[in-house]
Length: 113
Length: 114
Image (cartoon, rainbow over all chains, first blue to last red; front, side):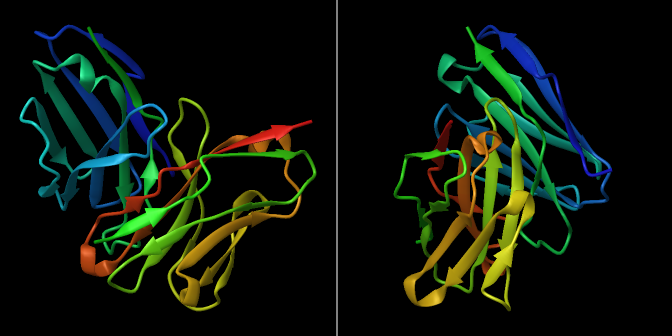
């Protein structure tokens, strides 16, 4: 199984809502990532979890809250977002020895009204 | 600081023609180099990667890339493009010294005309 599964595929939320994006992988990878991608732009790293611990936070606003409940799951909790946060949110995973090879999910398209 | 440059925002080629997408990097460490492809609304798929050894690497879907250290380049090539290759292509660079962090280029959108 070489898939990274993200749910939901599409999410529309208001600025006062609380929602979550979910990501799951069963490749035994120990590093998991959240990227944000705006239209016609490259992915921008938000967070990295390594062995279920947050290892990189790219100065992301606190309205985005990551969580790694176990080695297969990664969540991104969303609260009080702004319309400019609308984007494609990509989850990825990589092997523990960091070969740099990321396996990406298909993304969650978020629209903030 | 690390940086990756893809000088071409858009490229249009005829089906069956050859393709070369350019990538230049600036990195303070021995780089790992990657090419990813993204179809509209989809995630990214790895085409090929270079860590060390033979500087000409083969990837999936008939793509290859050549690492040229002297030119700090890692250009992607395909001898004969198919209409299904139309997508956006991202060059990315990482290094063990920088941990689990890839730097992506801005991307090149490939259009294929029949």
